[in-house]
Length: 293
Ligand code: ADP
Ligand code: MG
Image (cartoon, rainbow, N blue to C red):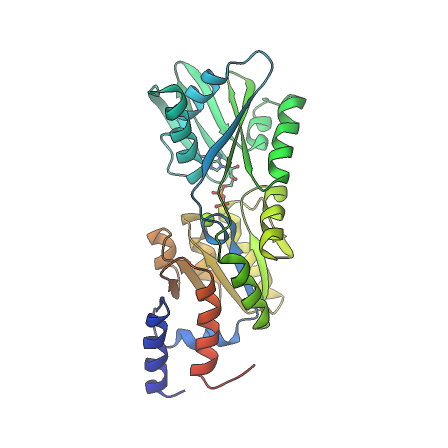
C-alpha cells in the first residue's frame, strides 16, 4: 500500500476508536488468523464484586471477611479490590497487614492480627498443607461452574473459607466474537483463572477453545507455541500479566481501559475497551491494504 493509503487508514482507525502505533502495523493486522483473548477485563468488564462468603465448619464469617479483606487491601488485583471493598462494607474498618507478599497469578500472603494468612487459588493453600475440607471444595466448584471466581482463605495452617467474586461479560463481547469468526479468525481464550469459570464465560460469548490456569509468566509461551504451529497470532489483553504475550504476538491489541504496561506493549489500542473494535481493526487493514481474504 502507498504511504498515503496507510495514513488514511490510520486516521480512519482513530475515528473508530483504534489507536495505531505506526502505519506498518496495518500490514501485520491483515495476516492474522488466530485471536487470543484474555478473559478478565477483556471479554469481561473486570469490575469484580464480592458475591458470597462460605466458611468451614466452626469458622466465623465476619472474621474470615475481616482478615481476608485486610490482606487483599494491599493488592491491586481486581479480585483483591472486590474482596477488600466487600469486607469493608460488611465488617467496617480493616486491620493493618505486615509482611505482605504478592504471589503472581496465585494469590497473596501476609500477617494480619498475628495470623499468617493466605488468600488465593486452592492449589496455593494445598501447597502449604492447607487442604480444603470437602464442603469448601464443593462450594468452589459450584461457583466456578457458573463462571464465577472462588478464592480460598486460610490462616495458621488451616483453610477457613471461600470467597466468591465475579464480574460480567461485556455486552458487546459476543457480537465481537461473531464478527471475528466472520472474518475467518479463530478465537481462543487465555486466562489465569480456573478452567470451569473460563469455560462458562467462553460459552456465553461463543469461544470454543479455552486455555486456562496459565500463570502470568507462561501466557507468552502459549502465544509462542501457536506461532510455532504456523499461526499468525493477535493477542488482546488489558493486564500487566498480558504485557509479554502482547509484545510476543504478531499483533498486540490493548484495551484502552487497561493498564499502561499493556498499552505500551501493544501495536493497537482499542480506546473504548469494546472488543468489536478488534474486528474493525482487521477489516480496516484489509480494506486499506486492498486485499479481501
Ligand atoms: P487473569 O488471567 O484472569 O487476569 P491472574 O493471572 O491475575 O488472572 O490470576 C489468576 C488466579 O490467581 C485468579 O483467578 C485467582 O484465583 C488467583 N489470584 C491472583 N491474585 C489474587 C489475589 N490478590 N487474591 C486472590 N486470588 C488471586
Ligand atoms: Mg485481564
